[in-house]
Image (tube, rainbow, N blue to C red; front, side):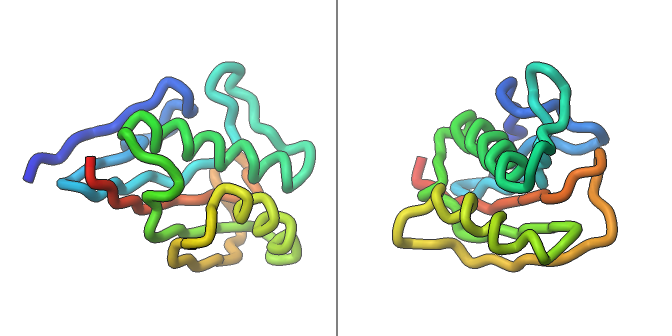
Length: 128
């Protein structure tokens, strides 16, 4: 199977030696996204809900570039620096899915890149 590198101008450029996403067959592996604005380069951190929304928008941009959307996601990993924010993160995250939610884990970590409070990575499977 061919390995296709997916890059989206709507998501912030990677800050290291990795790709936005890699597609192999029908499966898309999307690197963790933080709330960095692709256009301004600024981190969106006014509150955890706004931060989570920007993360989800960045993921949407990458999924769209690969011809997919949130309905194609089968697995997510959420990293956060404070599980006390879980309810707010979950509230925003949940609005991006209909009735078929992906498998998921949420992990509290000590620190995330760029001082982020939340980072989310996904695996999606599409028929395109």
